[in-house]
Structures are given as C-alpha cells and as structure tokens.
Image: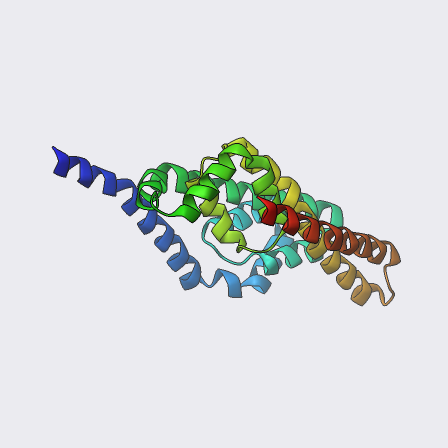
Length: 224
C-alpha cells in the first residue's frame, strides 16, 4: 500500500518535469528566440488579428521559459506604445498564470514535502501565506530572481492564485512600459528622423519611477 502511494506521489512531479522539458526543448528546436524577424513579418500580415496572435505566442513563450525581452521590444515596434503595453502585460501575466498553475497542481505537494526540512523554503512559504501580495510585489519589482523562476516558483508556495496574478500584473507593468515605450520611441525616431519627445518624456518618467521603487522594494524585502 505504501509502495503504491509512493509511486502515485511521483506521477504528477514526473509529468510536470516532462512537460516543462518538452516545452523548453520544443522552443529551442523551433528557434523561437531566434525567429523574431520572421514572427514580426508574419504578425504584420495578420492585420486586426495580429495583436491576439502575438499575445498567444508570447504566453506560450513564457511557459516555455523563452526570454521575453526581445518579444517585448518587437511589440513596441509593431503595435506602438499603448497597444504594445496592453498586449505584452496581459500576455506575460497569462503565461505567468499558466506556469503557476502547472507548478501548483503538478509539483507543489512533492516539492514542498521534499523541501520541508529547508528553513529557507519554509520561511518563503510562510511569508507568501501571510504576506502574499507584498512578497509577490517586491520580488516582481526587485530583479533578485529570474522572471521564469518566479513564474513556477510561486506555484510551489501557498500564495493564493489571484493574489499572485493581480500583483504580478501590477508590478510587471513598469518594466513592460520601459521596454515597449523605449522600442516605440526608437522605431519612430528612426522612421521619422526626429526625436519623439513625448515618448522620451514618458520613458524618463518611468525610469525615475523604477529607480525610486526598486531600492524601496529591496529594503522591504530584506526586512521580511
């Protein structure tokens, strides 16, 4: 009976690992990170449906742990600042939500049991249960952990899903604005041969905001 229970305990983590490795292998094999120009040309041809297809593609890339910075820049160049921000922030949040659910429902029980003797993991688990919104917000603002690690890592803690999703969306927004507006400003500057001062001003304001938020978030994170 115990042997059967132990075997069943391994099934979900095994599925999780196989699924994650398969997605990463597929992304690398297809060269998702290297086909940015092909993707850009194809999206432009889709017209009205372009933003929706891009959003779906971006979400899949997040689940496959493909770095999203290049895609974020492409969104700014393709869609401009406003639509680009809307597409990227929602795509990144959707992908992050999928990662969270995959980790929680396929690996949390196993990993939490495995790491139950780890003081660091227990502390993080307790902090996310008591201060879920704060911890999610701080770790999204302060680039201590890689984006893809956080997406799966929070699924292994006790932070509520909707708390994770809301604060991920809010605290990924400044970085998203920075990349998208920066790409839009550069694209317009090159195309029009003049400096888009409105976008540059927006970019400067976001840089100042991030410069103020990150040290504050770092201090709060250290205090917990």
